[in-house]
Length: 309
Image (cartoon, rainbow, N blue to C red; front, side, top):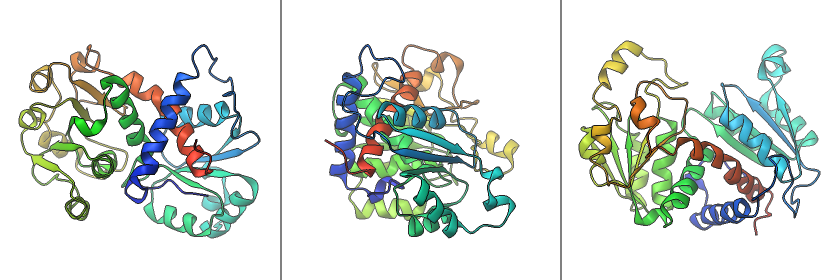
């Protein structure tokens, strides 16, 4: 049994095995219907229990389809219907009950502390579907998408993030160390990535550069990422924050600073941080990016069950 909570806690070789397995499984699904099981049915009879404390579209859809394609089943719990919120049941007791009924638990949560407590008391794999500080399943899928489109290892590419220092960027920073790629971050002053995380990067010989100019950050990049400026975890003055980021919108002018064959990625949902012409343009790969969540999450599940090829 293995958990999948933060990219930085997982060995590089295991992350690369997940990517490789996802590539193989995607190739073998040509001409399959969405809910057709993979021929080897590796998780036949297994139950994935999911719970969403935050809104979800892509994570909810992709994990459901992922476990079904592995010939397992999924059950989604609503936190507002559980004793956890209504009857004061402890997290430790909930962890033990879920471990008794299910074979893996995926949680999209508003609390890092909940992940810590659940990990301590669960006897089945725990997967972080999103937390305030981390979005590991999204970013690992993004690595897969980049390598699929660019047809080369991400270590040979220049990656750029323009926007807020949020949970997605945290996981992207962790991935930059694990997969050895160069990462430029373009953001306003006072919105830089977490200092402890940057110290971890330095200690592990990562290569991250911070720019306070979006065009300078984008220069020579193979991939441009962004995300909503006002995220689900934000409790800020929204008007002020949007004003602070007015010069960090991904526009055609910003994309022109990157390489001619650069691609644009966004984990969605989108806001004002990208122009419509970029989002819907030829360089945008956001819908392929969303679909690939299925294939990588299948391999994450297999990793957690120690069933990777």
